[in-house]
Length: 357
Image (tube, rainbow, N blue to C red; front, side, top):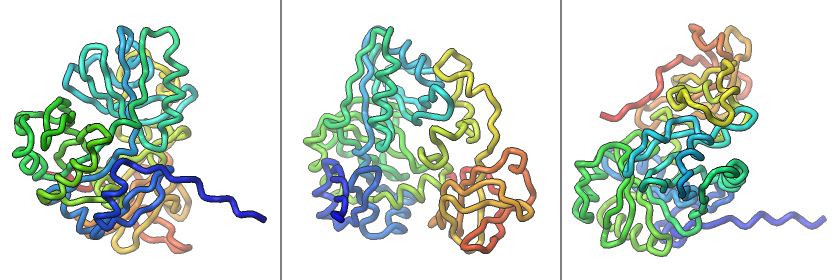
């Protein structure tokens, strides 16, 4: 029998730079991505105390333009895109036709009738097909810019301070969710005061051909390269959901504490979001034993849900987890998580587990 070859992994424009930096590369959503460089905890701590940079160029970027762009976006999303103004960005959802989420996304308004949508890497093809299917009847043009755009995320409490000498923008004057064109190390970029770590920072949209040089300049001024491992521990400490774990085609999104993303407007799939969620996403703390996705969560010995994401928190020093449990069990006084056939006590915690100052 001839073995089936592994599919060819896609590479971001920074692949060679990751290898130079000594990254350990792993497959992730069809991409060859750095999981760590010096080590997960060192990279995590750098973002919590200073500044780190992530390559998130595997994310997808769709340009939505035309006289009907706003009406189209209002139809395919749950949040109110009409409240955005040029130079502002907002978190949003793409609801499914039959329930669940197609994806959770960010939308950046460049100008009237000109929006940029950033989607999850593993969902690029699915999201594109979904949006194309919904575009009929709207005076709108969709352009997939994923292949020509690189995206770097500079995150941490010192991010603005470390970037400021190399840009002509007043970073201190930019509020959260600001989106603006500027120069960075002489390159024309767009910066957004957004991120996925629970810390301050800026996401940098740059032409793919210039990404490697920009990355090297960021490292040269002391910004620490950080991989997918630290990105996951940081987002979990901050209580941020990850598509495919806390969200999905078959998960009612209002199981999560993000009901504010659904506004009272007409939109695709609205009738499904008006149905009550049968489950609830909760935070759990354990004392010693780390837990992983899929581990059973119990109340009084009965399985009431499952862990969706878990890790040992580098900042807090103990295991934490997000878990999707039956709604009627969410307020139970005590939980356990089954790990390799043994139940371990878990305490319900408020999310986020960690909040930056």
